[in-house]
Image 1 (spheres, one colour):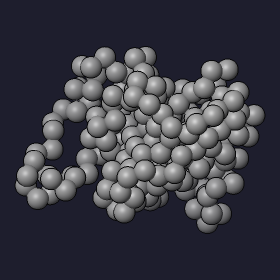
Image 2: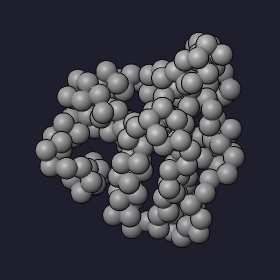
Image 3: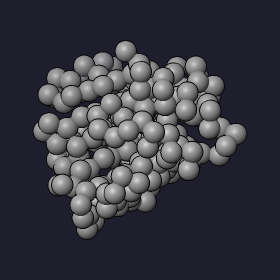
Length: 191
C-alpha cells in the first residue's frame, strides 16, 4: 500500500502526543510500518504544535511535505486553517470547533478570524467539524478532546473498533480508561 499521512495539529497541552502515540500503536498492531514524528513547535501550553504519523508497507521518513497529508486532525479550528497547505487535494480535515486565542489575539495585535469552518470548506477541503470539547466534557473530562477526535477519525479507517479499543487500553492509565472509551464512542457516533 502507498504511504498514508496524518498530521495532528493543535495547541500545546491538548494531548496531541497521546493521540499520535495511540495512532502509531493502532497502525502497528494492524501490520503497517509506522513512523511518528516528535512534537514540533511550542509544546508548552498555548503554543502551536504538530506531529506526523505516516504508515504503509514501508515508510522511510516521518516528515510530511506540503500537499501530502491525507488527514489533518486538528484540536483547534485556527490550527486547521494554519496547516491547510499540507492537505492533499482530496484530503480530509477532522477538527474540533473550539477556539483558543493565540498570543497575537490575546495581546490585541490581531483578531481571531470568524467563520473558519466555512472558509476551510470554501477552499474545497473536506471538513468534518464538531464540538469535541462539549463531547469530552460529556464523557467526563475536558482533557479527552484528543480521544473524541480519534473516535471521529475512526470513521475514515477500515479498522475494527476492537483494535482502537486495544490501543486505548495499551496507552491510557486504567483509572481513565472507561472515560476515554466513552469519549471515543461520543466522537465516533456524533451525528
